Image 1 (cartoon, helix red, strand yellow):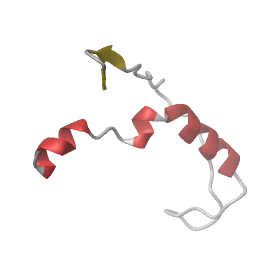
Image 2 (cartoon, rainbow, N blue to C red; image 1 turned 90 degrees about the vertical axis):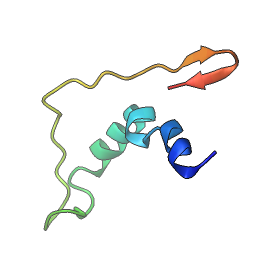
Image 3 (cartoon, rainbow, N blue to C red; image 1 turned 180 degrees about the vertical axis):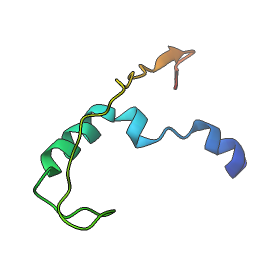
Length: 64
């Protein structure tokens, strides 16, 4: 399999572990320096609710 073909099977952590990433963002609020802006990190609730995808098992493999 080529790297290009393999890239079709990569699932970003922001999608596969959305709840954990949101928890980390909330815990970083007002506690750590921001990596993208001057000053401390400020968390704000997303304006659009994110739908979390549940993997489907098909022939013994997880399809995401």
